[in-house]
Length: 473
Figure 1 (cartoon, rainbow, N blue to C red):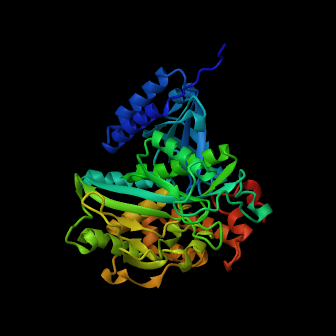
Figure 2 (cartoon, rainbow, N blue to C red):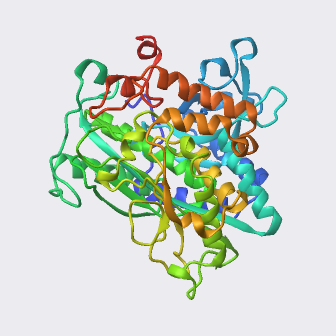
Figure 3 (spheres, rainbow, N blue to C red):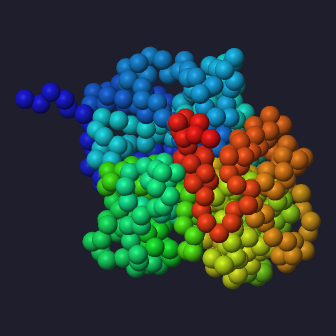
């Protein structure tokens, strides 16, 4: 006798459901229409036991709450949580925050990865009066992208190339302070992996799950460094693209956990080999027109595309902390390993902060290569989009690359904290909160990076720490 019958959907049907939901989102179907559809589905589908509602903190760490389906249907407009327990959110004396639901960002899940009977939706952090919470950068990005579209139909398109490492053992990052090393799963390199080896098994499994969740996969492969991977998928609207980054990392971590491994998105967990990046490809369109394309323009890019680049380069040092938010991320900005640490733009030089890939009318784009994989995706995409479209410009002289990005987090914090441009982007409160969080981590780590990875830069990393680790100082 079967006591439980929870929802399990085959992968091909999952892909159809998630792609259809993604299309609704891309076409900006009315939020009320989508909410009614999703709530009706939850009410009618008896095999769902819980709805996972997630949000991201100021540093870009994913937080998840499972709500009983029946409770959620009755209380969706009155969900609350303790914001004082989230780094960078409210103080203890004003702890309660509300949690709204973005029904357009709804996903059906592979049951073999996430467990049967669950669906997934992104939440929106709200103040007590239901206004948007300033430190919820997802809401900031979504509101900005929506305002551009409502103004003149402008759509911001984004795709990232997020690299990671695979290490033996569960929670390898949390145990680094004890072990002092990571154990590689593979000694291979770029594109090299036997069809059935553990690294390829991981990549294949993660890619299948992402495809089922509507990512529209393009290619996947081992990266340059041993035990390093990259799984690529198609561009989409900016907020959906940022959501997919969070899901990408969640899927990789969960699948690695099931295989007794750790998927790590530390920018530079190993010395002597390439680090991991999150190259961010962006274009701006209006209707069917890619505004960055011009067949006669330099490197096939339009004047508006080059202006976009110039503005980003002009503010490169102010926004460096947003794109490289950890002590460890400054190890990656090392010129010996294809590091994109030169404040310039180039079609061919991979040491440039910004690259112009080969493209056509559909694919012409700008690629910002200096982004670390541990950046808050909502924060970094919002920053690049708004800076590229509205930021100050020093003209095209900044393309030559006479300056370098910072090589340590202390200088990046100082530039971020004192920047009036950053104040205008985020507001003074969020600016100071973010700087304070980064300073707290930096203070627990040696100021000089040196040649070796230090346990502190792993232990106090915002994607690794927990309460016990944080208090071991």
